[in-house]
Amino acid sequence: MIIARQKRRENIAEYILYMWQVEDTIRACEFNMDLIEQRVISQFEGNQQKKRQINNWYADIIVMMHEQGIQEAGHLMSLNNLVEELNSLHRNLIDRKQDPDYMKLYYNAVPNIRDFEKRLGRKPVNEIDTCLTAIYALLLLRLQKKKISRDTMEAMQTFSSLLALLAKWFRNMEDEKTKLD
Image 1 (tube, rainbow, N blue to C red):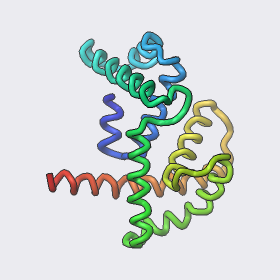
Image 2: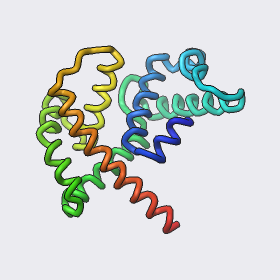
Image 3: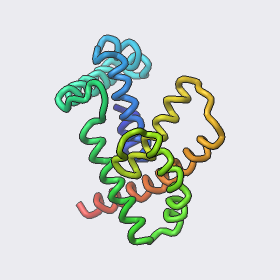
Image 4: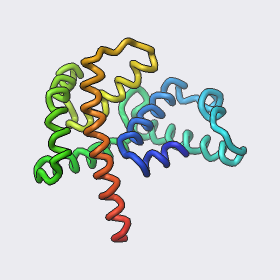
Protein backbone atom coordinates (compact mmCIF):
# COMPACT_ATOMS: atom_id res chain seq x y z
CA MET A 1 0.00 0.00 0.00
CA ILE A 2 2.69 2.47 1.05
CA ILE A 3 5.13 1.35 -1.63
CA ALA A 4 2.37 1.11 -4.23
CA ARG A 5 1.16 4.63 -3.52
CA GLN A 6 4.68 6.04 -3.81
CA LYS A 7 5.43 4.13 -7.02
CA ARG A 8 2.09 5.19 -8.53
CA ARG A 9 3.04 8.82 -7.99
CA GLU A 10 6.66 8.54 -9.13
CA ASN A 11 6.83 5.95 -11.93
CA ILE A 12 3.76 4.29 -13.43
CA ALA A 13 5.77 1.46 -15.01
CA GLU A 14 7.35 0.56 -11.66
CA TYR A 15 3.91 0.73 -10.07
CA ILE A 16 2.48 -1.75 -12.57
CA LEU A 17 5.41 -4.12 -12.07
CA TYR A 18 5.09 -3.82 -8.30
CA MET A 19 1.37 -4.59 -8.44
CA TRP A 20 2.00 -7.63 -10.66
CA GLN A 21 4.39 -8.81 -7.96
CA VAL A 22 1.70 -8.22 -5.31
CA GLU A 23 -0.75 -10.30 -7.34
CA ASP A 24 1.78 -13.13 -7.63
CA THR A 25 2.61 -12.88 -3.92
CA ILE A 26 -1.07 -13.24 -3.08
CA ARG A 27 -1.30 -16.28 -5.37
CA ALA A 28 1.85 -17.78 -3.83
CA CYS A 29 0.23 -17.36 -0.41
CA GLU A 30 -2.90 -19.06 -1.81
CA PHE A 31 -5.05 -16.02 -0.95
CA ASN A 32 -4.50 -16.86 2.73
CA MET A 33 -4.37 -13.66 4.82
CA ASP A 34 -2.57 -15.44 7.67
CA LEU A 35 0.29 -16.33 5.30
CA ILE A 36 0.29 -12.84 3.81
CA GLU A 37 0.51 -11.35 7.30
CA GLN A 38 3.38 -13.71 8.18
CA ARG A 39 5.39 -13.38 4.98
CA VAL A 40 4.63 -9.83 3.86
CA ILE A 41 2.88 -7.53 6.30
CA SER A 42 5.12 -8.46 9.22
CA GLN A 43 8.08 -7.07 7.21
CA PHE A 44 6.64 -3.55 7.23
CA GLU A 45 7.63 -1.15 9.95
CA GLY A 46 4.96 0.85 11.67
CA ASN A 47 2.36 0.79 14.37
CA GLN A 48 -0.65 -1.53 14.53
CA GLN A 49 -2.89 0.98 12.78
CA LYS A 50 -0.51 1.13 9.78
CA LYS A 51 -0.29 -2.68 9.67
CA ARG A 52 -4.09 -2.88 9.79
CA GLN A 53 -4.28 -0.53 6.81
CA ILE A 54 -1.81 -2.68 4.89
CA ASN A 55 -3.76 -5.80 5.88
CA ASN A 56 -6.99 -4.22 4.61
CA TRP A 57 -5.29 -3.19 1.37
CA TYR A 58 -4.18 -6.79 0.71
CA ALA A 59 -7.64 -8.07 1.65
CA ASP A 60 -9.21 -5.62 -0.83
CA ILE A 61 -6.89 -6.81 -3.59
CA ILE A 62 -7.83 -10.41 -2.81
CA VAL A 63 -11.51 -9.53 -3.14
CA MET A 64 -10.88 -7.78 -6.48
CA MET A 65 -8.86 -10.73 -7.77
CA HIS A 66 -11.70 -13.10 -6.91
CA GLU A 67 -14.34 -10.81 -8.39
CA GLN A 68 -12.34 -10.47 -11.60
CA GLY A 69 -11.59 -14.20 -11.82
CA ILE A 70 -7.81 -13.86 -11.85
CA GLN A 71 -6.94 -16.31 -9.10
CA GLU A 72 -4.73 -18.42 -11.38
CA ALA A 73 -3.36 -15.83 -13.80
CA GLY A 74 -3.99 -12.39 -15.22
CA HIS A 75 -3.95 -8.91 -13.83
CA LEU A 76 -6.39 -6.59 -12.17
CA MET A 77 -8.57 -4.68 -14.59
CA SER A 78 -7.27 -1.38 -13.23
CA LEU A 79 -3.71 -2.45 -14.09
CA ASN A 80 -4.72 -3.62 -17.56
CA ASN A 81 -6.39 -0.24 -18.08
CA LEU A 82 -3.19 1.54 -17.03
CA VAL A 83 -1.17 -0.56 -19.48
CA GLU A 84 -3.65 0.39 -22.21
CA GLU A 85 -3.40 4.05 -21.21
CA LEU A 86 0.39 3.87 -21.31
CA ASN A 87 0.26 2.20 -24.70
CA SER A 88 -2.06 4.92 -26.02
CA LEU A 89 0.42 7.54 -24.87
CA HIS A 90 3.22 5.48 -26.44
CA ARG A 91 1.37 5.28 -29.79
CA ASN A 92 0.63 9.01 -29.63
CA LEU A 93 4.31 9.83 -29.03
CA ILE A 94 5.32 7.63 -31.96
CA ASP A 95 2.62 8.88 -34.33
CA ARG A 96 3.33 12.54 -33.62
CA LYS A 97 7.10 12.10 -33.48
CA GLN A 98 7.25 15.01 -31.04
CA ASP A 99 10.04 13.66 -28.85
CA PRO A 100 13.23 12.69 -30.72
CA ASP A 101 14.65 11.02 -27.59
CA TYR A 102 11.57 8.83 -27.28
CA MET A 103 11.72 7.95 -30.98
CA LYS A 104 15.38 6.93 -30.66
CA LEU A 105 14.65 4.75 -27.62
CA TYR A 106 11.67 3.20 -29.39
CA TYR A 107 13.63 2.35 -32.54
CA ASN A 108 16.36 0.81 -30.37
CA ALA A 109 13.77 -1.32 -28.57
CA VAL A 110 11.68 -2.45 -31.57
CA PRO A 111 13.84 -5.45 -32.60
CA ASN A 112 13.90 -6.64 -28.99
CA ILE A 113 10.15 -6.12 -28.64
CA ARG A 114 9.51 -8.24 -31.76
CA ASP A 115 11.92 -10.92 -30.56
CA PHE A 116 10.30 -11.11 -27.13
CA GLU A 117 6.82 -11.20 -28.67
CA LYS A 118 7.86 -14.32 -30.63
CA ARG A 119 9.15 -15.94 -27.44
CA LEU A 120 5.99 -15.18 -25.46
CA GLY A 121 4.04 -17.89 -27.21
CA ARG A 122 0.90 -15.77 -27.20
CA LYS A 123 -0.44 -12.91 -29.22
CA PRO A 124 1.00 -9.69 -27.78
CA VAL A 125 -1.47 -7.35 -26.10
CA ASN A 126 0.51 -4.28 -27.16
CA GLU A 127 4.12 -3.12 -27.23
CA ILE A 128 4.08 -1.64 -23.75
CA ASP A 129 2.60 -4.83 -22.29
CA THR A 130 5.40 -6.73 -24.04
CA CYS A 131 8.06 -4.45 -22.49
CA LEU A 132 6.51 -4.71 -19.02
CA THR A 133 6.14 -8.49 -19.31
CA ALA A 134 9.79 -8.81 -20.34
CA ILE A 135 10.99 -6.68 -17.42
CA TYR A 136 8.79 -8.68 -15.04
CA ALA A 137 10.22 -11.94 -16.42
CA LEU A 138 13.71 -10.56 -15.76
CA LEU A 139 12.71 -9.75 -12.19
CA LEU A 140 11.49 -13.32 -11.71
CA LEU A 141 14.71 -14.74 -13.18
CA ARG A 142 16.73 -12.61 -10.77
CA LEU A 143 14.63 -13.77 -7.82
CA GLN A 144 15.33 -17.36 -8.89
CA LYS A 145 19.03 -16.46 -9.13
CA LYS A 146 19.12 -17.64 -12.76
CA LYS A 147 21.98 -16.68 -15.03
CA ILE A 148 21.01 -13.90 -17.43
CA SER A 149 22.91 -13.48 -20.68
CA ARG A 150 24.49 -10.21 -21.71
CA ASP A 151 22.23 -10.09 -24.80
CA THR A 152 19.15 -10.44 -22.62
CA MET A 153 20.36 -7.69 -20.30
CA GLU A 154 21.02 -5.39 -23.25
CA ALA A 155 17.53 -6.07 -24.62
CA MET A 156 15.99 -5.43 -21.22
CA GLN A 157 17.88 -2.14 -21.00
CA THR A 158 16.17 -0.97 -24.19
CA PHE A 159 12.78 -1.78 -22.61
CA SER A 160 13.72 -0.16 -19.33
CA SER A 161 14.91 3.06 -21.00
CA LEU A 162 11.78 3.29 -23.13
CA LEU A 163 9.50 2.66 -20.14
CA ALA A 164 11.35 5.21 -18.00
CA LEU A 165 10.83 8.00 -20.52
CA LEU A 166 7.23 6.92 -21.14
CA ALA A 167 6.61 7.01 -17.36
CA LYS A 168 8.00 10.54 -17.28
CA TRP A 169 5.62 11.59 -20.05
CA PHE A 170 2.76 9.92 -18.18
CA ARG A 171 3.59 11.73 -14.93
CA ASN A 172 3.76 15.05 -16.79
CA MET A 173 0.41 14.30 -18.41
CA GLU A 174 -1.14 13.51 -15.02
CA ASP A 175 0.37 16.66 -13.52
CA GLU A 176 -1.27 18.70 -16.29
CA LYS A 177 -4.64 17.02 -15.61
CA THR A 178 -4.29 17.85 -11.91
CA LYS A 179 -3.59 21.50 -12.70
CA LEU A 180 -6.77 21.65 -14.79
CA ASP A 181 -8.96 20.17 -12.04
